[in-house]
Length: 304
Image 1 (cartoon, rainbow, N blue to C red):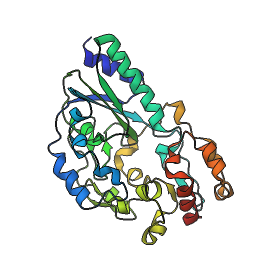
Image 2 (spheres, rainbow, N blue to C red):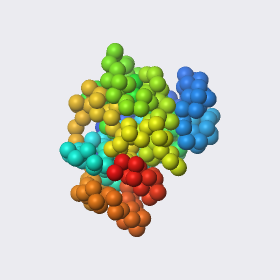
Image 3 (tube, rainbow, N blue to C red):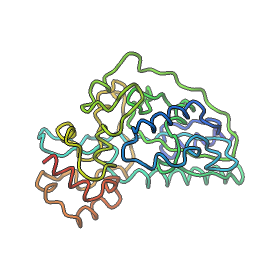
Image 4 (cartoon, one colour):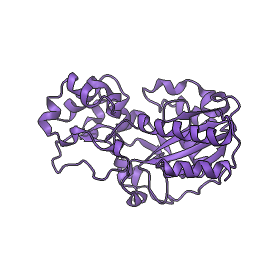
């Protein structure tokens, strides 16, 4: 079995939806788009996006000697959506229901890289899960893992968009895969549904208007112009995904570590009375900790 076939078989064994490969080269087409996005201030309060511009575009600056970028998708669509007919109940984005995906997927990537090295020699590389200057959607698109929808998220015909992206950047040359064509057509449901108008043009998000950005990354007060639109979301937002026709193909994940924590059974008073001690204990290994106790309380106070 060749190295690429072995890698894809191992990725499937570890639960990844798909594993595709692209050559580790400079992302020439992305450079002007990234520069324009930054110059317009669309990154909002995420000042870290201004750092490591060259590394974002050239994986060989992250991993010396890199030959291939391996893009992987990992499903997080829940068995059951945590929702309520009570509009006063806070809403959490689906990706944050269970254990922090950084922990879950990094464990699988390390195992995948170890398996590859054990079978095909000393392979140098690094594992990435939304935690370094890697243009994950660009690499996923380049590898044919899916296409970028108008909401800027990667889409797959067989699963929609409720999955995480991850990468291995390695010094082993693997055959690259073909790109996937765009299947969004004239559909604008995600653009039309966004209550804050954050999708300023197809594939371009103004983070200053994005509910996910405001409830997770933004420090200080929520913008008064958007407070009504943000509610009931207190961490993240799924609106542009929920309305996407391709997500009718989403299938429940099989990852036990994505099982929702005890907060799933909370009532409105539990949310109102949350303390910093409770926050630290309940969300210790949850993506929700990203907002911090002060950020979550701010979001809750704005909604409740």
